[in-house]
Every structure is written in C-alpha cells, then in structure tokens.
Image 1 (cartoon, rainbow, N blue to C red):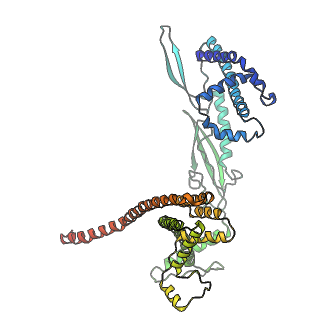
Image 2: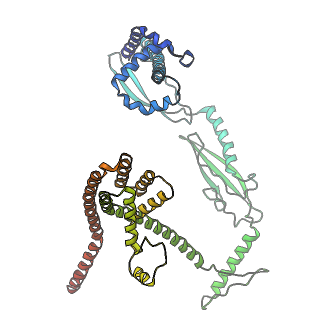
Image 3: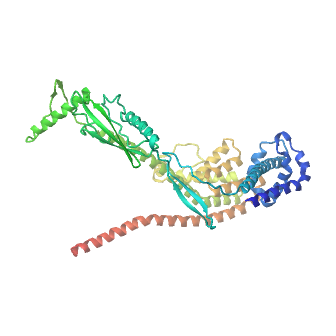
Length: 509
C-alpha cells in the first residue's frame, strides 16, 4: 500500500509541475464562482486527455442541459469551466485523503502491524460471546493464527446476589400484568420466561394448580366468592446456579356482566330443552329465561347480496367486452386501411394522369365512394329519394371504408377554410400508418413544387403497396390458420375418445 501511495503522490506533484504554464487560461474564469482556481491548470490537462479518449457525442444531452443555464455566455467556455470545477474538486478530495492515508501508513509502519497483548477484555454479562482471531509466535520461530471464542463475564459472589435481588423485584412487578396488586388478582398473569439481555431463565409452579394456567391464564370461573390464595414459585436458572422465589397471590372470582349471565342462562336452558326433546321430531325453544322473555331467530341467506355481486361482476365483464370490442375494431380498421391503400393510391395516380389536380382527384374518389356506398347520386341536392331507390338501398349492404371516409372528412375541412396542405397532412396523421404518412408527404411536397414529378413517385408507391399487401394477406392467412389449431385439436381429442371408449368397454376395462 505504501508503494501505491508514494507513486500517486509523485504523480500529483509531477502534474502540478508540468501544468504551471497553463495559468493564463485559469485567470479567464471568475474567482467567485471557482474557488479551486489554482488547480485549473491540472484540470485543463486532465480534461484534454479525457476528450482524446472519449467520444464527444456521449455528453450531448448533458451539454444541452448545462448550456440552457448559461444562455448569454460563451458555450465552449461554459463547458470547460464546468468540467474544470468537477475535475478540480475530485482531484482535491482524492489527494486530501491520500495524504492522510500516507501519514497513517508511515505511523503504522513505525509502530508495527501487530499489537502484543497479555489479556483480552471479556464481554459483559448479557452481551453474548465474542469470536476473535489470535496470532501467536513461539520462541522456536513457529508463527500461526488460531480462532478463539471468548464467553461473556459470569456474575458471582456479591454481584450475583445483587443481581438476583433486582430480578426478584422485576418478576414481581411484571407478573401482575394489568392487576393492581397481588391481593386482588382478576386478570391474566404475565408469567415471563426470561430476563431481557440476560442469561437467566425462569420456570413456574403453582399451588394449587387449578386456578392458573402455565401461560398465566386465570381459570377463575369456579373460584368461591371469598376468593382463593395461590402460591407462585419461580425457578431462576443462571448457568449452573438455581434459585427459588416464592410469593402468594389472592385470586378473585370472575365477575360476569349482565349479558354474560343471560348468555349462560340461555345456553343452559337450550341444553336442557335439547335433552328433554331427543325422542321428539321438534325441539321447543324456551320463551323465557328468568324474568326476561326471549325471541329466537336464524339468519336467512341474503340472495339479494349475491345477485348484487353477480351484477357487479357482469358489469365489469361488459366493460371488458366493450374494451375488447374497441380494440378489435381498431385492429380491423388498421387492417382495412392497409388493404385499401394500394387501390386508393392507384385511383389517385390514374386521376392525376388524366389531368386532374390533387384536390380534384380526392373529390372524384370521394364522390365515387359515396355513390357505391349508399347508391346516392351526389349531383342531386334533394335528399329525398323515391320508394324504388329506398327499396334498392335496403337490399344493398352498406360497406364502410375508413380511408375514403377520411378523404371525405379531409374535403369537408378544405371547404371549411383549412388550407389544402394542412388538411392532407392531417389526413395522413389520422390514418396513423407509415404508408399514409408517406403518401401525404409526397402529395404535399409536390403540390408546393408542382405536380410534374409526382406521378412516377406515386406509381412506384402503388407498386410497393401491392407487394406489401400480398405479404400482409399471407400473414393474415397464417394467423387464421393458427387460430384454427385449437378447435382442430379439440375435434381430434373428441374423435379419439369416441373410438377408444367403446374399444375399452368391449375388452371389459
């Protein structure tokens, strides 16, 4: 250890000498904010080494947080000042401890690493034994170590007698528990088994033993009115030494409340009635006990509470079902958006090739969708339809396509005054799929630059979308096949049971 300390101290002195020429940079910092300014030459040298070893990209987030605190100051200087403060503080603390460690090492070397002793201090009574390792050497040159256990000090003589007197008083006080005195004992006793932080144990004996349990519980139901005297004997054991401490208590009969007396009378009356009617079909319940009339009842099963609980559980499962329904709807929406994407892009590209503007193409796609969805003619302003059209409409199943619904919503936004670019970007974000975000970005960017190069980009996008659709449909097929495994396994097990059960029955198994 001494060698390491000397090397580190020498390295610190060498650093201090080597960096004396860097004092000019340290003078540029504010002294009030930098108390360890004299160490900044060393800090600058260490910081330069650190930058060479580590990548600068690792501390970008920390640098952003630091520079936000010093808005109007030189950013590079702020970073260096913060680094110098940290490095100089670490350097100072480390070398303070290193110097004290070096001094202590020298002192220990002068005094020697071993302390020769002629006696061991024994643990005090109640502290427990102590395990130590002793090193020894003999005149013959034998050196080794030996593990050894030192037991705690044992009391004897006057110390032991004084300790017993203290224990007697402690026992007498603790045994009473909640009772006021030994002459009026009506509550359970506290028959302690040991003394805290001591090696002394206690066992108990009672004479007579009919009124106090070994755990101190009073059995005073049959105690006469005048009470009964009981002699308690505590056997105190301290290692091999035993002492006996005896004292008397006066146990009072148990005092019953009015409710307890009536309860006991009713219990006795029920037992008597049950014994008298054992040969009869019914057992008559007593209607009076003493001078008091009694009404008996039994607790009926509360079916309403069960029904209420079932209602709560059912409501909870309905909530879960709705949440699952919403989740499934969201999944179906995303699946439909993915499947409809290639068709929508192809239609849009075709309309652009026909000479339409992007908004006009969206309007035509939306118009065609409305016509195919409900069979309505969008050119007619009158919303009333003939009976013939209504019959056709009732027979025709309405099919909802989310992508075209989003296009209709986008067109309504444009009519409401929102700019075309913003409406198309929001259309892509509402669909929440990367392909739609990519499509909206292509359309908006080319609307700003002109639609000259948009068609080839959309044709490539449509081609890629059709390939992605094939992969997606394949995945859906695999997923459906996986879902069918469960029912197929169930059918297989059922068929095996139908075949094997008759076979086993025919063999008499």
